[in-house]
Amino acid sequence: MSLMYEMNQKALELGVPISVHLDVTYRCNERCVHCYLDHDDHGEMTTAEIKGVLEQLADAGVFFLTFSGGEVFMRRDFLELVEYARQLQFNVKVKTNAVMIREHEAQRLRALGVEQIQISVYSHRPEIHDAITKLPGSLKRTIKAIRFLKSQGLKVTIANVLMTANMFEHAGVQALAKELGVTYTLDPTITPKMDGDTSILKLRIPGEELNQVFHTEALVGNVPEFCAPPPPPGEDEMESYPCSAGHTACYISPYGDVFPCVQFPLPSGNVRRQNFLDIWRNSSQLADVRSIRAKDLPVCSTCSHVGSCTRCPGLAFMEGNMRGPSSADCEKSFQRTGIPSANMLRKNGLVSTTSLVQIQPLTA
Image (cartoon, rainbow, N blue to C red; front, top):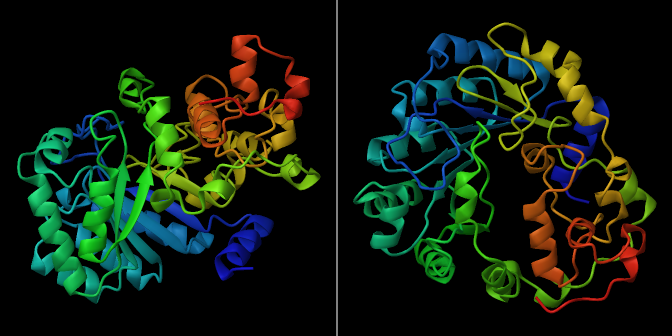
């Protein structure tokens, strides 16, 4: 049993928000085609307000703090905020496109003891990466920044979001990560915009390509094990929570709005009007999220994938019901295993959802 698992279990038992994702701005120097944010500034929190929130988070027991955006370095006070967070003993992770990071910023992040820097790279080829970010020269500047950060001994992770514009680029980005000596992660999830606009979902990669990704050992590890039919769910799986959102983790926007997760836009309070701990303990919205167990999901509880699915309640919420299926995750489970989900079968009228455990794998 890992220390991280033990920490999360203890936080869950005690009702402690051990992890918080804080966006300090939605402003950005890139205009990525798949971005779910409104980049205009509608009155983001001041330096003093964010420092006040950080103090409240420390009092609430938060340990892991992720700073993100927008682009964090669009705020001139960003390094000041990182310094304050480290004074409060947070374990700090930073998500950035790194375009604005030079040697000075890299040195300062190292001196402040930032745990990890996550940087989005969409292709090893400038013509594709820069077309996605809509910022000419962005790949070149991002790679230069990664080298600066590595030279300072910082842990860097390349995050590769897959979409139609770069769905054949993952091998090249993975090779680039290896060349740079950094960790590589891949995510084929495209989410609706936070205002509910679903137009960008057309960028999701088609099932055939998703199938190929899930069957590439270099990307997912042990393919036979990863792609094996799901085992019958046990009592523990049926009593489990959908994810950590609202249980041990939450998200705070640049305007102080609190949500269960960055992918779960259910307004649950605002730190400009309430103390964070009051929101965490007393929000009716968070209480609703916490009430859900796998057994309470009308469709998913009947699904053979219920114990192994990556179902996101936030994506389900954006589809209309936090207790409903997430069609994107249904597709992932199907392309990974060849076995259709209860939701897919229900939509196609193929079989009764009560007999799903008897379904045989289909050809993807």
